[in-house]
Length: 178
Image: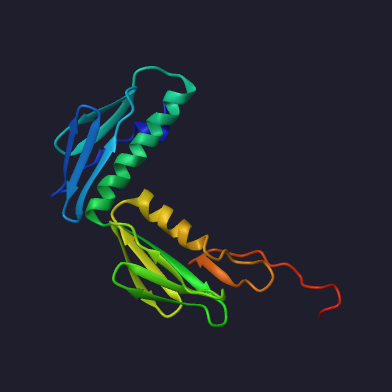
């Protein structure tokens, strides 16, 4: 059995968890999230906690045990607190502007790049920093990765889009440069 999967997920006040067939629904003060449940994973809901269990003990099912416990925990955390991810834009003239649900990036290309934010993700811009907020951790991470992919940080000067606490391994330039 998975050590993570054995831990029950506490349900805070104001959060409602329902299992309808193979669809798990979590409602809270910030919104509602839905997740399909694998047929080999069992989810039991009490008044104040959710427990995830599995019937058999193969390698794939043990992996699913811990995975679904973490997915349920992320859903509960998302509808109560939400998630944030910050990206820094480093480079001369590199900037971002936000108008409605469209972020416009100026990243040293000959044209600005317009990035429409998906439904469920909000953004806040402070000069060269963009903070993404969402209740869905998976969607938030995918959106941040898509934005980072517009101009990944390069190893020589460190220019590009990076996560807030990401460390870029720098390379030495030409051998003759000091």
